[in-house]
Length: 355
Image (tube, rainbow, N blue to C red; front, side, top):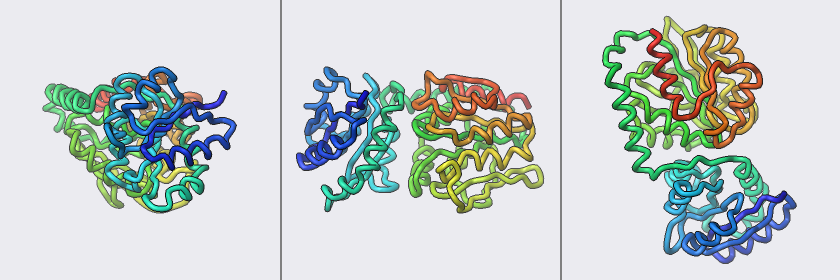
């Protein structure tokens, strides 16, 4: 059955060009289009498309505001296509935080030619989105407030845990839907949580800005990893886009090794690269977590960690945007526990409390 796509863009040229491009793919059906969200909203409620292709800068209501409302009321997989989502831009991160599954930047000049040249990228993004299941979200302010409250509540009974300075790293791998999932997990953790190393599939230039944004809303310190960074309590290191991140152990402590290299499982950074780097040296003193994402990156690395005695957790299917990476890890027998997203932070605190 063809994927039904609804386009919301204030440019008639863009709508016409996209209609022409999408009609050339047998797997995609252009269900309809509208020049802004106010006109689109009743049409979407009636027709219920499989995927939205959404601009940001439009009269009446901007695309990000509309996306937040849509995700809170009746989530639909959404791909943003806008001149405002240039590589590494804050607007692109806002789009992902609001629930966008994919982001495609378009230039202000030569737009028609660009869309024609980027047909494969657009079609791939739409097909990927169609396989996702975005979560219903609360408004942004409510999410951040809830996360802050959860972090404060979790911190209260843990004041004495600073004395337990055992270096036990937490590893997290995620992809499609991961930016939102990480916000839920990290936002619920107190400032003294064990060090966390994260590989989130993200393009180059996005990760530094994403880490900065997360640092502003979470109790833990969060930054893009640099080569030689020591992973310590209260710190989250996010692998930079376009580079691989490993952890090496020296004198009982873990240090980030950030380096270039070929893609692994088509990704750079790769979750497998991070997980495998710890498998030989961590034993049971590590917790590995697989969150939402498409594909199988990290499954084999998690199996190595599991077989070496590490504690392993996978996000459950119901709470995943894409149940790909967790599913593959489960199939390999690499997972000790399958949890809904809102219980992952608790698993991290329980791991730490084991002492």
